[in-house]
Image (cartoon, chains in turn purple, orange):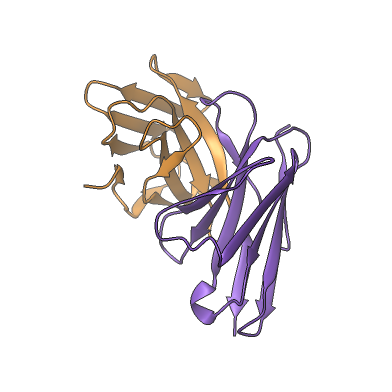
Length: 116
Length: 112
């Protein structure tokens, strides 16, 4: 159980393109999902917390107009990187948690984004 | 000071060896603790939760010392497939039950 699916797994596109990444909890409902970014040889950094039916909570330094998050249902959250530039190239990973606050998060497969 | 600190390694050990990783955290109000493993260019996968009484799962043993704010992971009889980066993860830093803070990871390389 507790499977999180992320799509697409790899994106290569031109600078200025907007890219949408989907995160789905396949076998459970997730009122809260999380979006992380990981640069090579660095730790995961939380970008935002996505709450079903309400606005996402962004971490300091993360531009909400640049990284649009929509959590329209209990099983789907999307992250849109708007007008992506080469510095946005990174590994984006979503996670979701099932149940109480002391439960672990389960991660999607990650999306490797490369902006040319 | 980082919220969660780990020795980055790498730890190079032969197959069959026992290896231990340590982790310290700064927020004394943290409530939940986990070890994840992350393979190169892959997402983190939960290895085990860490409980106050200590817990074991096969070859893996996790310990928590709340007084010292210290977490450990012991791997016995190392396998080649154990080669990965091990992430110490703590909920917080503001004790928000939903938010995780990751250590930088400890890299393990098990050699034949």
